[in-house]
Length: 106
Image (cartoon, rainbow, N blue to C red; front, side, top):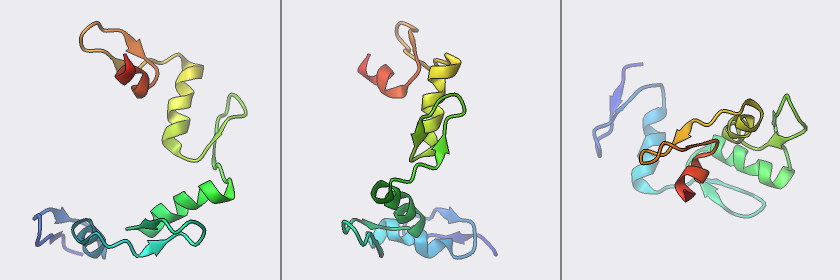
């Protein structure tokens, strides 16, 4: 399918059927509702991720310890504990941190 342009913000949208999903960012429409707590989402995939909070599902497992996570980015951040990586550096003093929020607190 040819790329489509959003009539509101003129962003070029690639992929079949993605323009209606993008339009929800302008309309505020949230058609996907959690049946447990009522929180609403613009996308069904975001609702499915949210449901993990209610089901206890933690699909992302650390290969080095027993830690499990709801989100892949949480596992990625956790892995810094095992690797010793400190990818977040202060621009002023050059001290490095394993987590972004630790840099922000600094």
